[in-house]
Amino acid sequence: MPRSIEVVPMRYVRMPIEVESPEEYGYGNIRYNLSESSITDQTLSSLGLSVPDLTLLYGEHRGSERLRALIAADAPGLKADDVLVCGGAATALFIIATALLGPGDHLVVIRPNYATNLETPRAIGCAISLIDLKFEEGFRIDIARIAAAITPRTKIISVTCPHNPTGTMLSEAELRQLVDLARDNGCKLLVDETYRDLSYGGTLPLAAALGDHVISVSSLSKAYGVPGIRIGWLITTDPALQELFLAAKEQISICGSVVDEWIAEQVLARRAALLTPTLEEMRTRLGLVSDWMAQESLLEWVKPSGGVVCFPRMREVPPGGTDGFYKRLLEAHGTYVGPGHWFEMPDTHFRLGYGWTTRAELEAGLDGISKALRDA
Image (cartoon, rainbow, N blue to C red; front, side, top):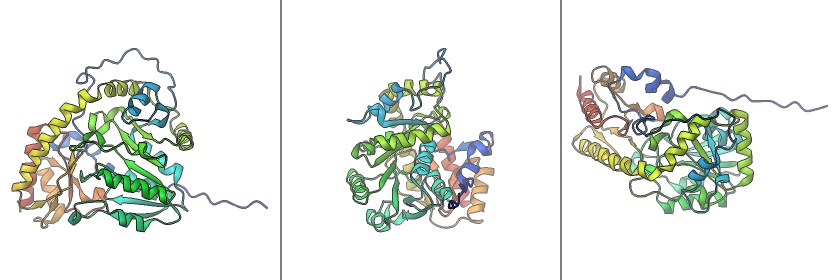
């Protein structure tokens, strides 16, 4: 008599960061949007692009060969076949989690984190060890704590660098320690590198180039300001893993949009020309935030080393509590930030994005935060 197999459905739950996102709340309801985690949204004209008369066919399932080659060119030794183009980094993370994790498996993941890195594994029902980053330790990753959390069932160690929402970074030595730790324990190392191109002290090696057990994930959304084309990717030099991930993608979407991939090709073909002024501008904006933080006695922070976000903390609970603060901030001062609960942290923390608005709007939003902290 055949054995019955219990099928456990994915337990989907909407993520607060998406429920309360500015696109859901309504961009028109916000004057100073400091909740965004990317640079300013670009347009076809700002990029100097005019979409040609493309044939709207099924594209290559792995993504266009030119696009994959442009992505692979970022690290010596990588080739186009090591890259799988996905519908944003979120889809890449979903593919990896659903392909490698099941209810009997174990994940070690840092927190706070981008919600998908936490919620998709939870929906799968695997066991999870959360390695909480601490403000008092500069939000540094404690590799010894990660090592202590590994079990024989651990399939993935999941980290983010540069980190969202704090903007902190691993050192190259720490990255290589994690690579060795995962290899020694027979598990995969997943590195969410979405902000890698926005590293102010120089970029780390592309993680997937450091071992065939390492998986890199990134996208064009944050550093290039084109989240609307939904282009992300995963990189692994393990052919068997690539085939597994491709099978997942084919069951989700078969292929990507030929229009989106054409735009992505044009963006990456001008990578240096686009990134150089962006990095210069973001350093200037980080300087503005640093000057503001230096005179803002009610907040403290860990200064970021990459990305376009930081994660300040209130030194004391403001008048009316944190709920009152966020209500005043939006209603009286027109400013929106990402409260700590978006990242499973206390609402005395908030994510502040300094790359999306104009400089004038950034300064007005910072002033609004200072006033809302003091309003009765």
